[in-house]
Length: 224
Length: 357
Image (cartoon, rainbow over the protein chains, first blue to last red):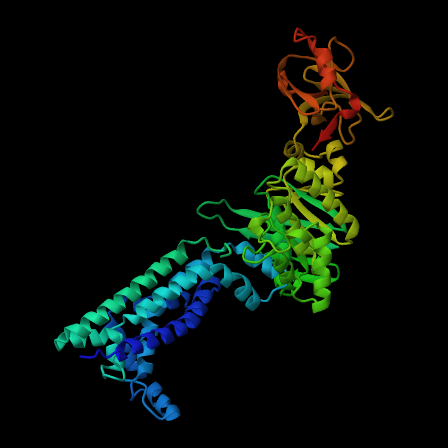
């Protein structure tokens, strides 16, 4: 029997999209938490950590409450794009992003906070705008830990099951990701598919973790 | 010209006592040294001027620009303050080559001008051959010169140097002092230099501000510092002074002299304005201004030698009753009489005694 590789490709695509989105959003949140003082900072800090602690199905339920078809967001989405958001691969991307973002925010914030502030001061004193300070100094100095966190975030979005199942469902050939396909394969006795996917996902994740650890071991700031 | 009059209070923290910075000074083009023990607020003053610390009250003026004014709410961000800040650990960006570090600072200049300026400074600071290296591939002296070059590239209107000689060996220190003196000649902007090294202070300063516990406790030319430290606290901060309590026995305004009871002896001293007969005063004398003698005489007191320490050019002899005398080595060797000398007298030249407040 030929193996259906679609779930694996879908997972990789979803995880890539989720990593890109959580990188952009996560670094911004991390910068906000590391540099700014504002009302509700503790609340934002707690909110960004929550997806790490909540059961994925609970997270998925909340997502349904927010982006489901009858909600204002769901209706607005449908009005603009012409099709519902839930039970599509896009919903899977949102679920994976939410699943991956706490890791990125935490690591990036630590990296930004641990960097020697003297460099940022020097940059400001040399006439650099905050934008320039961030992109030319803070980010390059924190790039290794942030890249390591992004790799782990990718691995985490690759493996999301509960939240994705809740909002994207289990539609073979459309929203069935690798993690869900493994469950289905085991349930239906398709051992070959289950084993193949398990081995591929394991190898991939192991490689990512190895890569992330190596990135983190290098001293931040030392040129490669 | 820079003018600052600022107050900044710090509440006590879990590991720090409460601290108040309350300083007021102005500095003209030339080198002004902020001297004081660590924790006296020197670096904090630089940080407030550069815009990294916001004072609670007061104002900071650089030439005709207001950098900070608590009353009108003006607080320019660091990037608009035109301060060339040379940080204690250089703070060269580790992920950029030396040339890139300079280019970062020259960002606002037009492109052609930028290249010309970078080349000019690399040349002037003898760094042209190292331009492509990363900071970790440079020696301490090269990093030092690189960070000064970077601070100067955008033509700052004020240069701030935070302990620039820290961590440099004696030879590099001498180079650095020469470099700073050449800067002083080439730039017509104030240079504020923070140090807790008295030699550095004398080598570089045209004017000295002595900081202690967040305040400026003395200001003036470096040589006046030795002639007239003003207070016992300043004399102790600088070191090398003998401090002694004395009683005024008589005063002669006509001859500008006085007679003091000092360490149990009648000692002639300078006229002490504002003092009366019978007053108790504290006087000081530089250790190098006192002379050693082997027999009694005018203005001499008997003393017992406790120990002596060899210094590069002179010997520091410690006597009982807390008297320290610095003597040139040859004089010391001649007086010591192969270590057999037991009776010592210390001669106090009248003009070397200074009253302290």
